[in-house]
Amino acid sequence: MKRILIVTLLLVAAGALIFAGGKKDAGREPGVRVIRVGTEGAYPPYNFVDASGKADGYDIAVIRAVDELLPEYTFEFVPTAWDGIFVALEAGEFDLIASNLGWRQEREEKYWLSTVPYLWGTGNTIVFKGGRTDIKSIEDLNNKKVAAGVGTSTTTWLEQYIARTGIKVEIVYTDGNIVSALTEIDSGRVDATLASPITTQLTAEQLGFNIKSITIANDDPSHIHLLFPKTDTGKKLRDDIDVALQKLHDNGTLSSLSKKYFFGVDYTTKEVVQKK
Image 1 (spheres, rainbow, N blue to C red):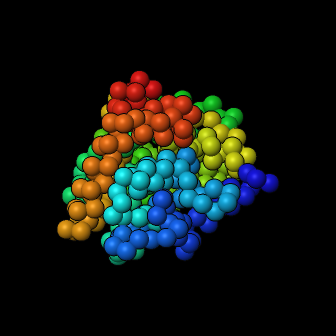
Image 2 (cartoon, one colour):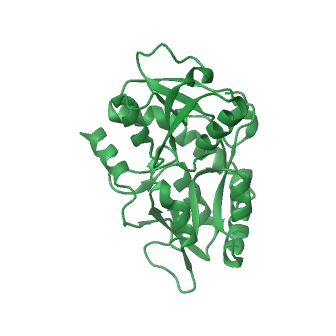
């Protein structure tokens, strides 16, 4: 029952509830600015809603640690469906996004990104239904259907790979929720998806799906950033949070949080990720 409850919470995480942040929730002091943080809330262990309805995950824990260092701000979390998260930021529904966002040139041009990466990508994994023996490499996706979330880093990588190699892959675009992709795989409507190995395994276990996966070589892992609107206010907030992120990196807090949420592994340096 607990697993079913967690999955249900993941599916409804994009609702209208706002989940409070850190130390200043109980009584906001005068002059303290409330910062609304958009997060998918359905991508464990990066961000999710736990069984008690509270926002949790590595992204969330990092923001809570930032909150401790910035007395002029208090942070609230706004779980938002992935396919609408950038539009919501541009519409002013929140002040920044913390949702495992890798660096991309188009994002750099359109938004302010934190200059201090708070995580490095754990690489892409080809995920497919257990029992299949016809997928052993990325080349084996030729003439197959692959579920891919709109606007995700893995989707961009796949699109670029198709353009570069000419491989014939039919991309079936989804809302970016890993639950949706795994459900499509389990039903046989698609052959595979590309996703974080950690998130995929956790979610598949919660759903009770039998999956198999292979890891794609990760010579150039992505660096993960917070994302802000490209305004003067957004830049000021970015600059303040950058200072806090650097302190958290230097004092080992980010490393400790990574080990807590990623099964004892520190993914906060590029060197560690490249060895995976």
